[in-house]
Amino acid sequence: PELLDWLAAEFIESGWSVKRLHKLIMLSATYRQASTLNPAAAAIDADNRLLWRFTPRRLEAETVRDAMLAVSGQLNPQIGGPSFRPFTITVRNTYFYNLIDSDAPEFNRRTIYRMQVNTGKDPLLDSLDCPAPSITAPKRRSTTTTLQTLSLMNDSFVLRQAERFAERVRQISGPAAEEPVTCVFRLAFGRPPTADERVIATALVSEHGLEAACWSLLNSSEFLYVR
Image (cartoon, rainbow, N blue to C red; front, top):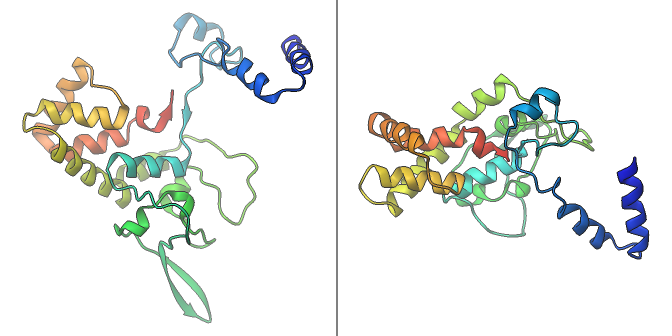
């Protein structure tokens, strides 16, 4: 309550400047905290009620899909225009929507351009808590379920993006095993692999191929969560 009173006073004194209030909050030490775990703090406040760190937040369903398209090099950057329709329509007294999973460029646009129909929900987006188009959702859920894991592991879209990701890495990296591994981590995580990660990923590539490494990173918490 004291902090809210102080912010309210600052807001008034600044001439009701929302921009200045936003700047004040976002430059604060609390707002700029990392998600690094502090065991001592976690023992006292495991739920982070006192905001001793940034709570990791899973990307929204649409963002997960867009991020996979981006790292695989398949994202269609076209802006505006009509939505893409990832379904076919069959008319038998009523309309039946049959989902299709196409790799055509028009289907690789950002998810915001995906046409939603009540009976044609995307299984991957649905498992990641994308609201049903027939329901008003003022606030999204953020759950952790087994279905999400199974969808991310087996969905045809994810498997295809892992293959395209591997193809992209082969085109821009050298022939040595370590170079593709470094490239995969830089594209997926924006950083090079640690020493342990390099050893594990190199062994995975040698035994199961580059696609397996790409698939593993697309399923990782670091790829799916904002930290």
